[in-house]
Amino acid sequence: MILLHRLAHTSEPIHLNPDLISLVEETPDCHVTLTTGTRYVVLESADEVVAAVRAWRVEILADALSRVPR
Image (tube, rainbow, N blue to C red; front, side, top):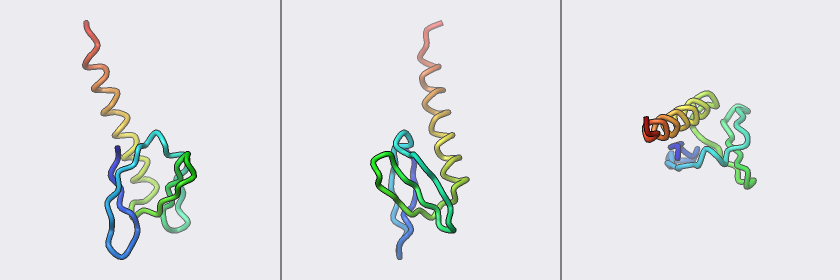
C-alpha cells in the first residue's frame, strides 16, 4: 500500500493499493482513479504518486528476490 493524503480541509491520510490505480492526472489538482471507478483527489503531485508506486514495486521485488534460494 502507498500512503497518500486526500485533499480536504484537513489532509486525510489514505492507503491505496497501487495495483488498483488505473489513471493519475493533474488538472491542476491531482486525481487518482482506481480500476473500480473510485476517484480520489490527493495533495501529492502526479510525479509524487508515480514515485511512490515505483518505490513500492521496487520494495516488493527486492523482497521477493531476497527469498530466492541460491
